[in-house]
Image (tube, rainbow, N blue to C red; front, side, top):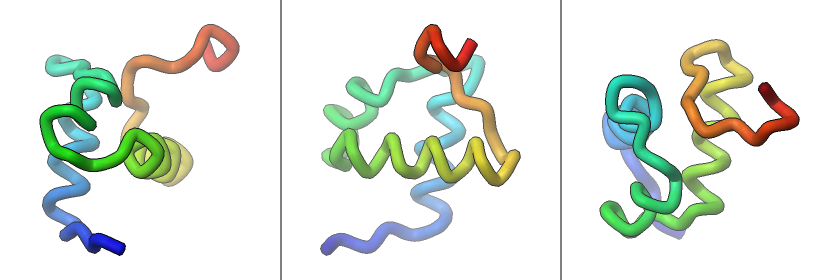
Length: 61
């Protein structure tokens, strides 16, 4: 299992937010981190109140 630094995770989460608004699919292709992992980071950040990344499903809006 690959371990990622806090700085790396924070940078990825920041890219999911405005103004970049990169999609999980795009970030997965660019970084090599699995989509599953990226969605988990996004969910954890959102639940911690750290971030509210764009790209929620219509049911979350």
